Image (cartoon, rainbow, N blue to C red; front, side):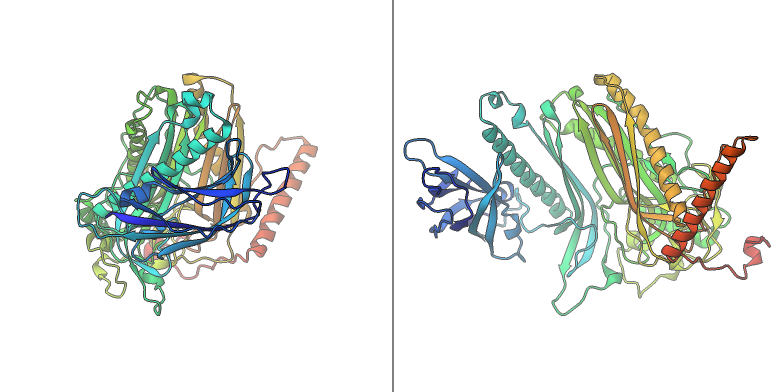
Length: 637
């Protein structure tokens, strides 16, 4: 679909003084796209030039429009020496390539210099005219919309959710090229800046092609990351969820119950994540995690772990039927991953907990740094690990998925996390989200406000040691004492009181080392750091009388001498889960009265803080009344 790009330079303002003699500037502009360059006239002796240039026209292919930015360079004219650079502007043309997009980009853009920063503004008009192209072998993905939001955007409805898409692009970093030794710092910075822009456009185009092949027209939950691997190269990665979005009419408001309408089978492999499950208050959430160095690339799933199997005695025939129907619906499709964190009521049948994976790699072990195959293999290992962890929890999907890296010299930590879940079989089997036409054969025997809290795994074959309690709503299914997730709180969730931000921070020193020794030391530290972060989160939840975390994000950063960990989430009190236990200080010394008195004082302060937080966050758990003796066997609760 060839097209025509038009650009017009209108004016500039607040330019820096480039001529010390007159305290003014003789500014002109170069407009470049691809290999074609146009220039404006010189506007002499002005810090607020008015160019009002003609329309500069570029005839290009649409794939070039996606890959290449429009490059605008503002310079100061010198008669007897080289022109001095003032700064540049890179304009992404992709927003103009959608059928619903505006026909023009216009306004004031900041002029940026890689040495001096912002150096004034420039007023630009940009237009794109596309010609119809019926070539099915074209290499562009014009028309695919990208949204960073992890829920369906307002003014749209998701007609179909096709599944996970991912891609990465690798290139040599200009900072490490031989020519970098002789060129100026500004030229070196601009070479990297331009390359990053080109790689970002190429990556987005390739993701868009995958979406078109799946029958979609948008990517929701789009996350793009840059990995600066030094001499190994520069990597641009992106993940997202492919969807078919329909524009809502201006007079209709989006229905919160029908954000997602259908779910289809084509699901691409997605970056994976080890599993971390928060269980009873006396346990740290069981961390289904793995770390490896390049000396052992295989992340073989642990053997002897159940995949959930059939439901336990409490599940009943309806829950067993639910599992059977879900398994049937999944037989012909791949393991679903979603970067979305917000879903309509009933989409999540059960939530198994957080799953995460981390792997330590050595960048100098990459045989072909310019090829993406090695990095793809690394992420594929993590995906397989996540898949096995989610299955161990009796789940068939991962939602709220994200990934990240931390790089220091030759060591790279790959991290990914999400939430293991069981999706409603009607979505998986029929792809219809018509809540009004419910198929009662597949309903849970519990209210929708608590169903997602029920454990998805078999209580008689749990993948970790834990003590469970009956749901405080339906009083029929088992629930954990605490629930950690990476998703937004489901709209049907019943809570009491207010939520709050909960964070855990951790710093661990490590010895200076190189190569495999360094990677091994980091790999050995990671499980203990993750354990301590979760311990802090558990204690801070108890201190606020809360029992669930939503939107959990754990970030591990590596430096030369230390590792840093940061965990952030929103804490709430789910009424379906039991009240959290108190915090008890251990390690009393018999016979030491002063120490015992000190411990009692601290314990009193903790108890007072819990009581104050309970009042502050208005947490009033509902009381349990008459219980079904057939379910509880006469147990007093």
